[in-house]
Length: 229
Length: 240
View 1 (cartoon, helix red, strand yellow):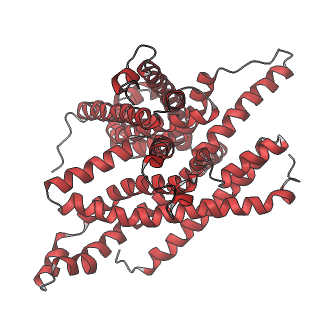
View 2 (cartoon, chains in turn cyan, brown):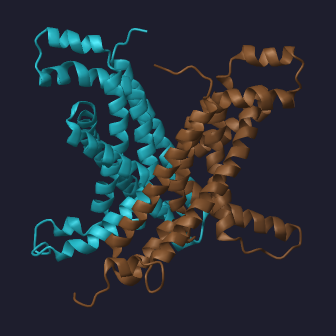
View 3 (cartoon, helix red, strand yellow):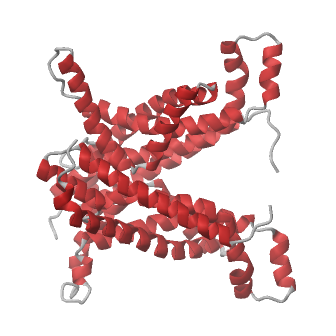
């Protein structure tokens, strides 16, 4: 075991960790907002919305993330330049990057999984509480944002923590589309130094530490919400 | 694009169409998944029984195995086990004075995914066994059944309804995780698709086709597991 390469590579490792974290935060943050919409579409939308949301989550949960990522990066990425004027636009430098495609596909994928979790949680909120809200004269929006959503989030919190960790474990796929994340750094170290296991071990420790931090954060959040047991 | 090949020609199962390559890749994906699922099931049964056996050394070892596999990203596990597995095997052969072996990518993929599946299976099966009412097993003992007969006649039929949803989830996740094998260079559906896209430049079409193939695998599996669950739950009172 030879870990002397860390001295030369630690700035790169930190950039990698930063990229991994950025992918995680973007996909979980935006994906979560999407998931709320998708979950409500399934629970209380009309027939069209309901089918659309169910179709969305079936597609994204029924196909591998790697295929979704490659469909976006290679597929959509090769179609994008055909849009007239896009190369001159302000966004082209972003649209060219693998990071953009990784962030988009991770977001869409996370939204699909999270929407199912939220759907279950929304249905698990006791009916009496919603009826009590309506009896108080709450409108639809007030009811959702004061009673239904907060209660559902509390129910879903432990599952959400698990989903976020799963999402963290999915981020190394970004290396297949040229994103310099933690795993890509390990790959580069392997190519430079011909060491196979040491970089993988170091990167694994990073992931474990991140997992522990996520678990800790969620435990703190869970402790904030009083529950009667 | 007047003389560019149409969608049907590109997807045709006969060369120069790439449909055959994709279908062959889908077959490889299914074969890898089935192999890994079977190995995982064997490891899982052993692991679950080991965890419940009460042997503390065995328990500590199995705990380490399931925790490590479930905490580390799948891609890293697959790449790490792939290199460690082939490397370790060759070192063993060298120590035994045998020539090094070129490990078949197909076998390596099955073994690696099987080890990953085994960790999850251990937990699913452990939970399912624990959920079997103790009275039923005691009744079997009271009737004088031996451990083998007891497992076959009482524990197994009683644990299957509890385990089946978890096993179904694991099957679906292994069909999707098998795409990661593409990263170490074995040609299953994901890699076959990338090759088809790279040589025709019709990436979007081929990846969409591959996605639909995976989706078809998922939907058909769902149906099969639904039928299986109905079968193992026969005679159970219906919920609500």
